[in-house]
Image (cartoon, rainbow, N blue to C red; front, side, top):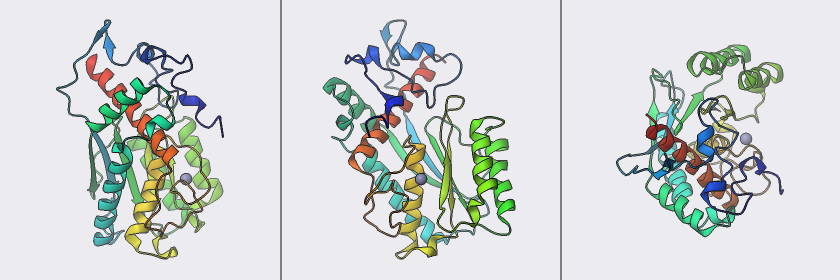
Length: 284
Ligand SMILES: [Zn+2]
């Protein structure tokens, strides 16, 4: 579909950096970000030296009460997510599928090549991960009523992450309460992506449905996590075929991967976030 990524059309004018439609409305910060669309790398007309910055993308698998997921399954899934996401973000040659400008592609590839990517497990849930390059993934187990699980999620969304009285909160509220999604076996998770009012995002995975799929549970869990991360990386729709962003795909398939175009989308999205991060640092 031609219009699937209109909201991130980088380069309508066909020129270089100066014409980025940036930052994307998806996670534009409400105040103070207007200057960014002139050039995320320049301050007072000068290129900024960001070489002293170590920039990390952090995926956090949060299992608050510890024993939901078998520790070995979780550990293996973590390693798989780590390897596959690193491979997706760091591989060269994909971003050019979405961007025609060679100079821009080179800049993006160089920037993401320097990125530090880590995946960790948090069993205490004491910290809020709301940095622009933080990707918290809650691993939740459906126990008791759908309502109690739903309330738990809404608590996390509102109290911990501050999605309060806005469209994301209302969306999550309607999704969980009205549709009874935690009772639907084929519903694996949900992601509240970034939007105009908040750069943070959260993924939730139902971990009680791992056994619904054939195949190793660590493979299923890793695939479910990668699917929701895809949404957190700005892919807001599903695709057909054998790929991770097909919600009907076999999540027990160890070979399931992002499509080439989705890899390009993810690289662009991560680059956007690095640019915002650098800009935020440059004005501190
Ligand atoms: Zn999905």
